[in-house]
Length: 69
Picture 1 (tube, one colour):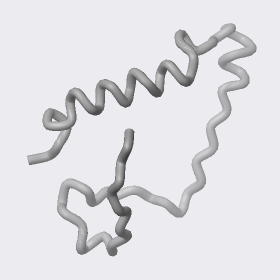
Picture 2 (cartoon, rainbow, N blue to C red; picture 1 turned 90 degrees about the vertical axis):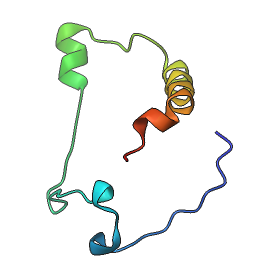
Picture 3 (cartoon, one colour; picture 1 turned 135 degrees about the vertical axis):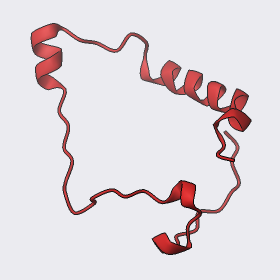
Picture 4 (tube, rainbow, N blue to C red; picture 1 turned 180 degrees about the horizontal axis):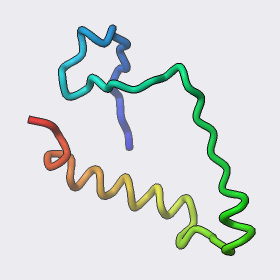
């Protein structure tokens, strides 16, 4: 992506309203797709590298459409 930005950590009350999320981070989230894969034979429809390439391309082409106003 050739991104040269900077990540800045701020307290929630200093974030713009569109970046404030009311999530409960004290709970752990664990996900395992083993059962889905074993019982239903699920496999990704495209390889991971191709999926990432398509996602990055879409994000670059739709940057303005996804920004909050």
